[in-house]
Image (cartoon, rainbow, N blue to C red; front, side, top):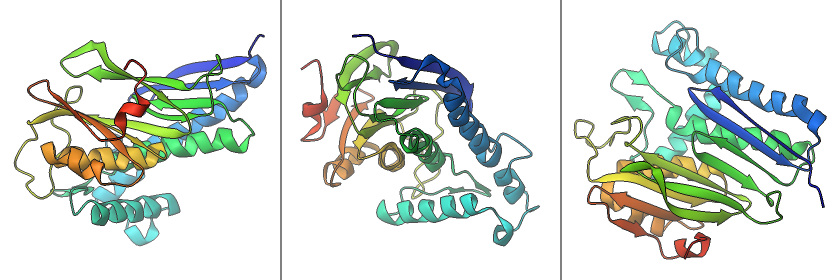
Length: 254
């Protein structure tokens, strides 16, 4: 049986964004365009690298928070919720700047997936820079496969996950360097771990807790272990892996 499939990748928010929709006809490109346009909207609003973005205007004091958009106020609310739930290890305030990227990425991927879901699609995934919302089944009628890269060798996949109707997010310093910090000790670099992958009920939840857990260093995997509905896989600087109790059930190659 032939399966209709639409798949596209574009560079947005400084990273590759890939959409794959099973049972979408070839003439559904306009649907994907709507999703890509949403990512562009998020980048234009929240990028700290764009002088014209709303977050940059807030950081420069040109825009008062009371006059900020509803999406901006929501992100601040979600960030504060995550700060409380992570015992302070997640914080978008760093020195004199506000950088919400640690929560915006997963939130944007989740919302992009919701656009597809509300259009009636059930089998698709949205991948932005390696963080993924996987829904339903792939074109072969199986669960989606997601690879975890070796932070010491980006060409090597150390684990292949089999997932459906959940989110997968990885935090680490092996691509962008020391861009994640511990708010409780901001002067100390996080060097004891290299990557931490989290599987959660959706990519928004997985992403925000992956960021918070990575900021905790080695103890981050213990935080994920006791977090209901989440599993994690950590690789430390000694190339040793530690994973949560229920993680193995998602692994395809074991």
